[in-house]
Amino acid sequence: MLGIGGGVVIVPALIGLLDGTLPPLQVTAVAVATSLASIVFISLSAALAQARSGQVDWLIARRWVLGLILGGLIAGPIAVALPLTIFRSCIGAFLLFVSFV
Picture 1 (tube, helix red, strand yellow):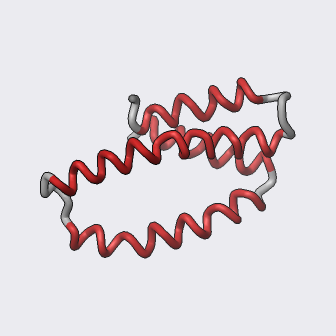
Picture 2 (picture 1 turned 180 degrees about the vertical axis):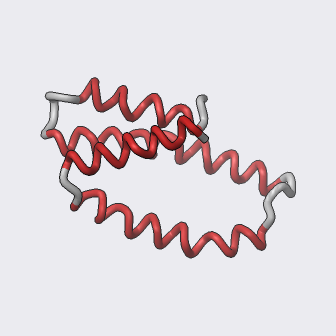
């Protein structure tokens, strides 16, 4: 619905809505996970449509896939290990960066 802007809106909104209902670290993790889970099917559908229409440069896709998989596997345990203030600060810094890009 909103693309990258959807996560920028949904994560802080979910943190605000869930605050007080779960332990603080779980609130942030659930907000991020919910946002990511909600885009899986939309992203998969869009990727398949782009591939079917010949809009995918498979050479670039092959070059990126290993790094993307490794980054995803490494980022999860790092995010869980971070203290809450640092985790939320990283989210805030990313949102600030995205707002200028």
